[in-house]
View 1 (cartoon, one colour):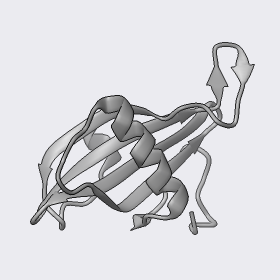
View 2 (spheres, rainbow, N blue to C red):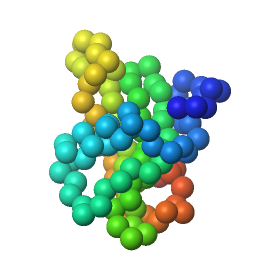
View 3 (cartoon, rainbow, N blue to C red):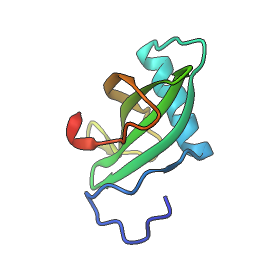
Amino acid sequence: MTDAKQILGGWSTEEPVNGEVENICIEAGKQAGVRFDVCIPKTYRVQTMCGGTNYLVKVKVGVDKYLHVKINRALFCGDKVTENSDPAVTGVQYPKTKSDPLKPEHF
């Protein structure tokens, strides 16, 4: 995340996917059982919270076919603090296009 002015609880601007977010998407996709011929995370937004991190990810799944996925990675697992909790898909929007912006208020 390059938005240095992001406020705790606020959403970052939309940015190209990096390796960390791509790995989170892969794990979340496995959990959700998502199967597409093409599944390429393209851009994302992130929200850092006291209890974890939320991600909105734009994923290419075909020729001008996209889906938007909301993923949560909790900082807490029960009453234990963990840095490596499994990501959980908490929302999916489909169909979307390349030009549709990632809007957290739509989830």
